[in-house]
Length: 304
Image 1 (cartoon, helix red, strand yellow):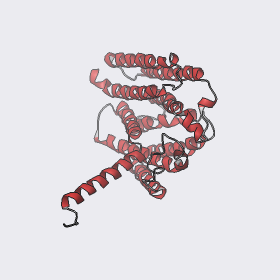
Image 2 (tube, rainbow, N blue to C red):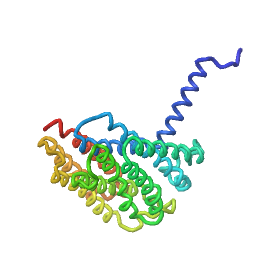
Image 3 (cartoon, rainbow, N blue to C red):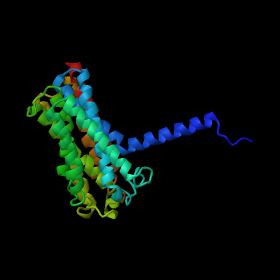
Image 4 (tube, rainbow, N blue to C red):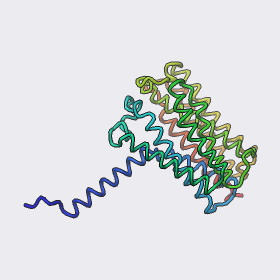
């Protein structure tokens, strides 16, 4: 019997290797987070330009590349810590599926292409903001989270940059009160977004030797503080309407209903005190809320 592999077998193996590599790249770039960041950039652009244009693809694509590159660089920076935690030890680098040098080259390549696209395809200011986001996430925040459990608060500035970058690309002014209000919303949203993830895996962080809020507060205190940040996110969203964001009554109604829904879902943190603290559901909820808010912002012109 011949041991020569068939053409079909070779094709199947090639397909498997392609899918495996694609899966590794998506995991390295944290595709869901990167897409959410890209959507916030598109939201800023549409709020400024008030129309969908082909030019919007430039900042959106650039920010997507920068976000993927930044996430990949972060995984390179924290590969030793990731190997110690249950949640992250199966990531591409600590699992051994991708060597660190390859991950570093991929991240630097993505960041370089994304930066070049912003500087050449958008403007000098957007390019500077893109590099600022990389510096703040991979430099400031990644360093601070090894020193303080409260690093997420200064680190939350990262969330304000992409919509601002999109706004400028759409023709808006950097200091326009409207984008400042939207940027503030995304800044506030980032705190519970990061914090809930930390709280959900607090023991993992303690195991890796990282500062954790679970060493500072009791579970009851954590629930109240987290609920306050979730409520602040809903309030910040409603405040944007005072600055002319969302002029349609239908969209305003949708934002109000979604804010009530977020606070109601978050209030469950005040009523549950089981040993396995249920932060994960709130983490998914607040991300879903951010997505809904961006969709409503982008749909405002359709209902005027």
